Amino acid sequence: MCGICGYISYKKNYIRTAPRERELARGMADTLYNRGPDDSGVWVGEHAVFAHRRLAVIDPARGAQPMKRVAAGYEFVIAYNGELYNTDELRSELEDYGYTFETTSDTEVLLYCYIHYGAECAKRLNGIFAFAVYDCMRQRVFLCRDRFGVKPLFWCNTGEEVVFGSEVKALFEFPGIEPKLDNEGLCELFAISPARTAGCGVFKGIRELKPGQYMTISRNGIYSRTYWELKSGEHTDSYEDTIDKVRFLVTDAIKRQLVSDVPIATFLSGGLDSSFITAVAANEFGKQGRKLATYSFDYEDNDKYFHKTKFQPSSDTEWVPRMVEEFNTEHTNLVCPNDVLVSMLDDALVAKDLPGMADCDSSLLYFCREVKKQHTVVLSGECSDEIFGGYPWFRDPHAFATPAFPWCYDLSMRKDILIDSVKNTLDLDGYSRMRYEESIARTPEYAGDCAEEKRRREISWLNINWFMTNLLDRKDRMSMASGLEVRVPFCDHRIVEYVWNIPWEMKNRNNVSKNVLREAARGILPEDVRLRRKSPYPKTHNPFYEAAVKARLKEIVEDINSPILSLCDREKLFNIINGEFDYGKPFFGQLMAGPQFIGFLVQVNTLLDRYKVRIV
Image (cartoon, rainbow, N blue to C red; front, side, top):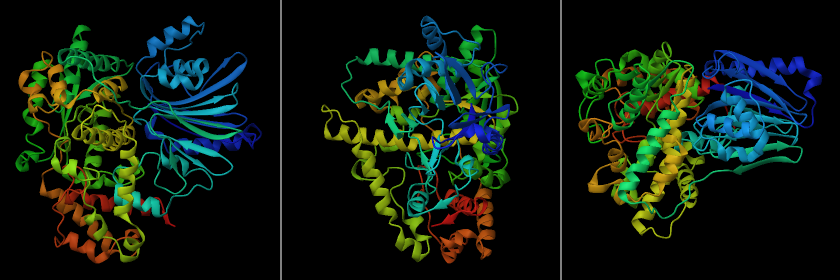
């Protein structure tokens, strides 16, 4: 895993100004240092400049980037962030075509795969990736991103150059690109965030290469194409065969993602998803005479304040020891101090370049930094709920009846805190509705769906393309800000493609949530763990956090020069601080309520202040 950046122009010859370009590219790459603390590199070509920060995982000694190879007399150069899980198959296939390899790195395999197949290479890749290739033969630069956007890639067309980077902060180092928020950006911030519209970089002029797309930049212009998308159709496998197929796909994805030349571990909550991954990984390690390392997370004094809810029916602390004992893992339980949740809100904002999920982000950033002290790669259970139908809204009548994002029905809390001039300028409800309708219209239809199943497919589509993408972005940005690579086996596109068309009567048989996955785990997990009810990423229940984040917001609001006051009503913010504002409803998802909304506002102020954002 790494950070990449660069720029392209067919109007300039960068070789003539190579010293300047190297300095500029290094400055851009330095903003991505945490994504790749092990090494760095810059390549200057006639019409493109690439820079790279490396987190060494495979072939640390010989996998340096940008990597250059010559084929048929033409030069090809790659800057790559990601991991391929079918490297061995691709290498064998390319060797049959006569290619020879100097390293064992997936970077070299990916570069030769592009050289041989061109843009069609994207369809052959199993992994998480964002990469750029300078293609002298075809006279173009090729940018590509994985199917679900696990790895980020932003770009901006200045008119003279196309500038790209793993994170927006790298683009802001390029002359003339400045952090500005126009009406669209403000609507993203207050109507959509902490999610984000695919393709939208929020800041004016900043775009994102969408998941499942590639882009070519040449003298003829800039063109993007979709190389992968879900397809709806009839599921013809029997129930028994479906269970067997899911078991194979999940276990195969996990095994593929255990390849690493550096220490590897798993996140373990004791829930179905992380336990499935841990069980398979522990068994594979056992075959090699090794013990798997596992990590669980909790918050200081959470045992004193935790109370069961329908969304969080049990604490992980009841289940993690069960798994550790069953699979004899080398376990570490990390506990986040209360003050860290607030003090690291700023670090989490900088990691993401945008406000996020408040303490959910700052705690994850803390945990990732702690894990990095011993490990460089971990496997995590993200994506399972979106794919297998684990969230409440897959069966909630309100979600079926309401034409809105099911994790954010009501924007009143967001609108109420804005000053009148901003509130009257931004149609937050209309913007949210537009983005929702755009997305729903792209849902792949299947003629065999009844009305209820058609709607459930729409909800599933929204989850995969919005909620899941947001969680993947959060995990990438918090982990990579710590120099930690997190792999997500449930995000294997083969699993998603197959499960997408499994009928609900199988997924939810006997009204058991994620039934297909639970049945696939039979014989792999202990029965009590296999049947444990879903419990989401843990949050603090300690009242200290709410008091501390209110105190932080109070400091901000008392300073009349705080930039957030150019957008938000000072009196309304004081009402929130003093408990006079009712924020009992979740502001995002199932568990992000008032304290998280306050943390979000703190991050909005940090964004405006730290990045010197201009409102235009």
